[in-house]
Image 1 (spheres, rainbow, N blue to C red):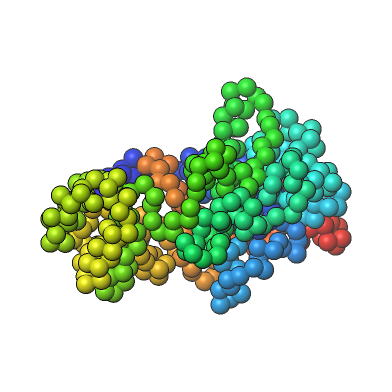
Image 2: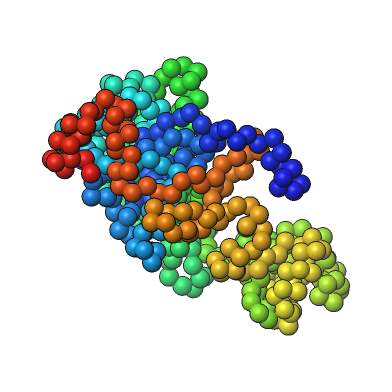
Length: 407
C-alpha cells in the first residue's frame, strides 16, 4: 500500500481523533508534558499551565542557535499556554475555573504539592465531579517511597532495568533516552483515554496514579516474574537468549544486526555464506542446537561479516527475507527516505521564526490524520484569550499581572 492509498479517506476538518477533548496540563520537565503531548498530537486541545517565569524544561538543553530549548519545543508542541502562579489564591482560582471546562487534568508534581496549593484531586473534583485527574510521579501517590523525589535515571536504577543493560562484563548503564519518563507519559495518556471511556459510559470521573517505577516494571517483559520465582537472569548485551545467531556483527563500512529465529532463516544464511554444510551440522541444525552453541555460531557469522560490505549484507539478506538492519546513528536513521515518507520528522516554524524538524506523531490514522499543528508556545501566549473566556476582565488581568500572578 502506498501513502496516498492509506490516507484516501482522510478528513481535513478535524485536528485528530481526539478533536473536541480539552485537557488541562499542570506539568514540568518531561513525563507529564509527554502525556499532554501525546493527547495534543492526537487532536485534543491541551492547555499547559506554566509559572510566569517558565518551567525548567525551557532552561534545559540542548539549545538551538536562537536559545530556544529543543527539549521544550519537542514535548510542548500543539499546546496552548497559560502563565499563572498557582501558589497564589487568585492563580489557584483561575486554574480551578479552567478545570471546570476540561475533560482531563494531567499533573506531574511531587505527590502532595498540588494538594498543598488547593489543586489536588479532591479540590478539582469539587468543581468538576467527572474530571479525569492523572497524576504522574516517580514512585506513585502511595507506598513507602511515594514522598521521595525521583528522576528518570534513578527509577531506571531502582527498577532493576539498569542492572541488565550494558556490556556483559561492564557496569550498569542507563538508557540514552528518558525511558521512564516516556513510558510514564504513554501510560498517563493511555489511562486517561480509558478513564474517559468509563466516564462517557457512567458519568464517573476518577483519579489515576501513574508511577515511573511501575511503568518501567510493567514494560520489563518477564523479568519481574523471573526474579520472584528464582529464575536466573543474565545480562545478554546485544544477544537474544532464546535464539542464535542474534547479535551485532561488524562489516566493512559499519555494523549490522542479524536476527535468526527460524531454521529456514539459518538455511538461507548458510547458503548465502557459501557454507550449506552448516545446515546439517549437529551443532547448528536446529534453533536449540544453535542456542547451545552460541559462541561457535557467532564466531562463524562474525568471521563472514568481517569480509562483507555493510550495504551488501543489508540489501542481499533483506531481499532473501532474513531479518537484518544496519546499525545506524541518528543522522543516518533520520536521513532514510522511509523516515521521511512516514512523516517522522516534520518541519515546524518555531516562535522565533526559525524552522526546525521535530519528531512527528507515531500512530497513523487513515480517517483522522495527525500532525504537528503548531510550535511550542511562549510563556503566557494564550493568557488574554483564555482569561477572557473565563470572564476575567482586562482591569483584573492587569492587576494580576502587576502582582506577578500572571505573566
